[in-house]
Image (cartoon, rainbow, N blue to C red; front, side):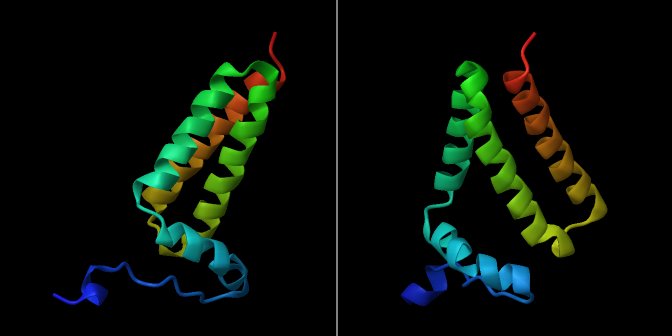
Length: 102
């Protein structure tokens, strides 16, 4: 078995936004698949327990998820889009609660 068959496909850019994102998507694609998931999960946990300053890591998560959604938007079905938007809105809501506690 050759080593090229076990490698993931190289990200391909089809528009200006994807071309601008290509360097970072190449870095992310080169990481083990669990790394981005663990980093996002860790940022959400830190943000949830850090008080008002928790809005910073949560904001980073919102930006990352919105960027991923924008990159994948043309390839998603309407239900997949809806689920991803719902997750982003949930994290935005948690961020707002961290920023503006009672």
